[in-house]
Amino acid sequence: MDEYGLYLHIPFCQHRCAYCDFNTYAGLEHLITEYVEALCREVKYLSAYTQDQIFVRTIFFGGGTPSLLPEQQVEKILANIHDRFVVSAAAEITLEANPGTVNLAYLRNLSSLGINRLSFGMQSAHFAELQMLERTHGNVDVVNGVQWARMAGIENINLDLMFGLPDQSVETWEKSLRMACKLEPSHFSLYALTLEHGTPMQAWVARGLMSKPDSDVAAEMYELGSEFMQTHGYQQYEISNWAKWEEGKGLLSCQHNLQYWRNLAYLGLGAGAHGYANNMRVANVLAPAQYISKMSLSNERRNPADVPQDFPKTPATSNINPVNKETEMGETMMMGLRLVQEGVSQETFFNRFGVALVDVYGPEIKILLQQGLLEWQGDILRLTAHGRLLGNQVFLKFI
Ligand code: SF4
Image (cartoon, rainbow, N blue to C red; front, side, top):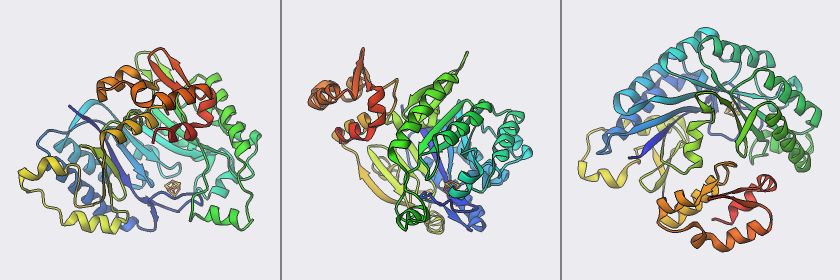
């Protein structure tokens, strides 16, 4: 029985940040009501389109800025999911929030609807860095957001921080880390800035209006961040992610993202969302208006004979990539090696594919072991500390 992660994409932002290349749009908030209606239709469509029940172990509202959704819309989406899918009683239900878009009453309502994890895009504790990124919040909004989340009963909190910014110094990075750690969230994601094609920030750097991020400094910041996390009680479990260990609960890692890293099934609903199930990777149309229009044509009633081949395709699907066994093995390696402790177990690999890991990737593994990028820990193959800095070089060997 597959247990799914459910990703819901909310493609609305108040303002587009200078570095962002996500599928999100400013000034389209007037579409929210119709968009939520379309999401609910996609939930219904997926549940009607499989002969099996859909078991859900995680739900993730990502964006964009999901905290722009009024409580009533979050309630409507969750009610549809609970009506159509079998949601585990212990499901992790995360909502990404921009600091400055939430207040105590809103978070109390989310908590009562079952949201039990919040992810705040803090990015930096420095006003000048936040301005450069064109973020619309200040540090006080992060402090308030975390405090209100706790008052609302949501203890599982992630903070995103960014490093490798133009003109960011190691000192300002350390100060951001220190101020973020003072808030004692259960989880941290530390991301290096990448200059994405077509973003304002990439154009400013290309025109010499902003200095180019220095990859050596970014590597130094990553190492500093790793050490800082460790000395403040956070365990690294993925290249960019750290979590606290809590008695009785274990490591407070992001269960939804673990579904991706373990290369397990998930359904992606909403504009531009990706899904992986039934040996297919699927992606939806990008534009919210097009998504709404595609889903408005959906009809739940269909020929049951069609069912097994097409799931998880919906009327909003624009891309389908079949995944054969060879691709699945390569993706399992690429994503599993991101998990710096768990790595890829020989036993799990054999149980999944019926073939030994070393029989498939013996030569690649041998080279990476010699280069000091991979190591064996008993049955587990994983990145070395050096390999964590050169992850992309390692992953390329498996595709
Ligand atoms: S808030 Fe997040 S999703 Fe929205 S524009 Fe900024 S970086 Fe992109």
